[in-house]
Length: 148
Image (cartoon, rainbow, N blue to C red; front, side, top):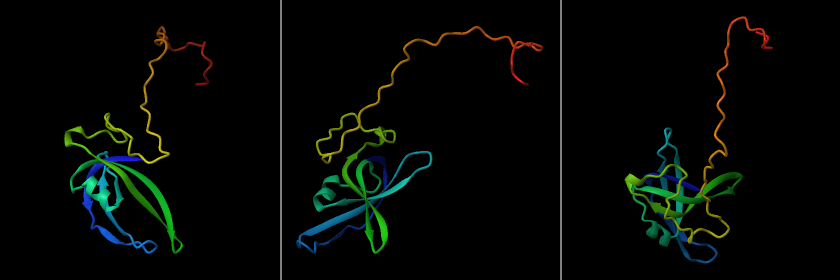
């Protein structure tokens, strides 16, 4: 999935050690706001110190966020996890319409099993609409079968 907008919050990075392997981990959360008539906000996270440095997300940046959604259960309650797997920085003059990806995108770093979106091509009508002669609606015309 994809969402375009402006970064309105950069939250503190969290880190720790994995219990099972003892390897270090790091995650950071961000909030993005869309440019629609009624703006929407979405909190998402980036997992891994290498990805956090690679994406280099700063407060006020215009970005396209490509993300996956997953839900997890903890003590009988369910929580959504929105994890970014790709972030494209957009210059302010080139803010795309919501859901429209930049033309020069490559999908080389897209996760396996996710097909790229195909562009939609509008088809022209096969034949022009036939013009009809105007209908004369005069009072007292008893040829119609309308009840009023």
